[in-house]
Amino acid sequence: MSRRTKVTGTRSFTLWLLIFIAVVLAVGVAAGALFLLPQIKAKQDLEKHYQAGVAFQNVGDWSAAEAEFKQVVALDAKYKDVQTLLAEVRAALAESAATATAVAIAQAEHARLDAQATATARAQATVEAQANAEATAAAAPTATAEALEAHYQKGLGYMNMGRWEQAKAELEQVFEANPNYKEVQAKLATVETEAAKLTPTPTPIPVATPTPPHTPTPAVVRPSSFDGTNTEGWTTNEGPLTNPGTGGSGGGPNNGCLIWTEGGSGTSYYVASSKYHGDWRSYSELKLDLWSSGGKYFTSGQGMHGDIFLASGYATAQRLLSHRPPDQWETFIIPLKDEDEWAFGGGATSLDDVLVNVTDFQIRAEYGEGVDKSGLDNVELVR
Ligand SMILES: [Ca+2]
Ligand SMILES: [Ca+2]
Image (tube, rainbow, N blue to C red):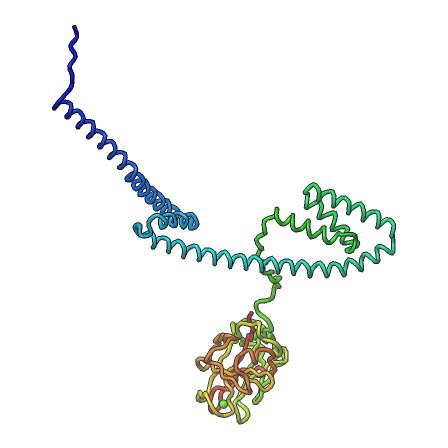
């Protein structure tokens, strides 16, 4: 037999209390979910956009970074350092926009100059082509017209197929023959524009500096070795000059030289023959053998004008040797370049002013006060 128990009194109240508490808890949880979850989610969204913005910023995608940071600001304007990062990103955006503008301006200018050059070239070509076309047309008008039309049509055909290079070749033939033929100029312009899109701009190749042709030249020119008794046109301004036909520098048979002996009141010089007149600028040095003896060495006065004297009209250059030639042959080498040793006169300010066209070349013959003498041999200009 079953027994039924009726719930009454204290036990019934407890049950209802438990139910009430359960209901209150359920409502509380639901309310919590309703109010708190969106806030948690919003917080997560904020961080997600923030991190995305930072990532875009790191890879330099300024627009995407800005978009993300703006979302963060919309949700929470004071979130972390979002305002600073947004400012950075906007600055970068402005900078890249300025760069892009500059590049665009440069490209536009480049394109404009290219177009200008092409137009100029075309205008010139038009003039030439017109002249050619007139001559050709006069010779064979019918044949030319037929050939032109054939090239023109082939050009249009290639254009339709997008074969720009072939189209260009055909249309250029038309243009060369008759620049005003139908719409050839417009078609060519189109073809060139399209062809240019396919062809990368070639890097200009630096123009090689042409190598000047090498002209072999003798190392020693205009030499005077005074073989035999030949004075080779040399003279002195004062005092006698002879060639004994022997005793030249280096010795040996038939080795003559110039000998000057005392004479006159001023300083004596060997005066070169007219063979030495002209442009000396290609020579690097002057070479000669000298000896001297007797008298008392002097380096100024008595009409002296250096040990080596050059003139070009009024312009003069002179210099002393480092020492008096000894009483045996010594070779002296004088560089033909501007050095402190040179003294200029008559308006010359550099050695080249005189070397450009030498009209007088003298080598000092007299080195001593009182009776003295000297010898000269192997005068050479060296390149
Ligand atoms: Ca000689
Ligand atoms: Ca003397």
